[in-house]
Amino acid sequence: MVKTLIAIILCLSFVAPVSAAAPAESKSTATQTKPAKPAKPDWTELTPAQQAVLDPLKADWSSFDTVRRKKWVKVADGYPKMKPDAQKRLQKRMHEWAKLTPEQRRVAREKYLAIRKMPPDKRAHVKSQWQQYQQSLASRSETGSPEATGGPETTGSPEQAGGTSTQ
Image (tube, rainbow, N blue to C red; front, side, top):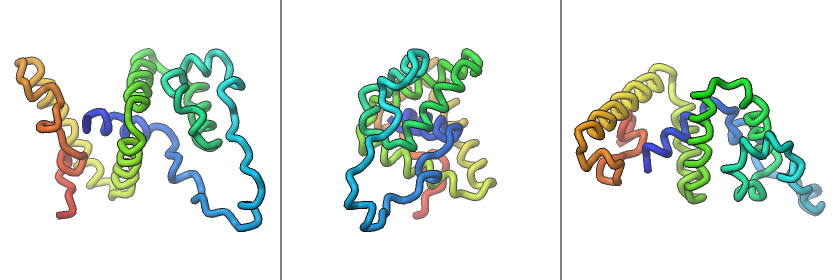
């Protein structure tokens, strides 16, 4: 589970972060009285190519705000220019993201923002420790260890994997 969250966090680090780019949703009282505009673009307004790329997100599309939708449209537009391995990685991570509960997504976003705010040297340290963790999982799976299944007893938060706990 945490492996999936970290993969998603890393994927999101390559895409413009919505939370950092979008202004807080504090609207003036004058704009609160107006009916909310529907988020754009609607799923039906996407090109067939964009729909194909964004298909893992189709079920959640209606819950995305305009900023998030535009971010994903940019990702879809850049998809044909990606190398095949990057396309596969993006599709895999979008499928993993779509499987997460809203709470798991919220936690992933918070962890992503926390990692992003770290000083570069500390971020590099977390990344290094995460890579070591990934390698240990790969070696366990090669040996057939039951811990390689990624169950809760063998996974931890990025803070645990990266040794960045504030305790």
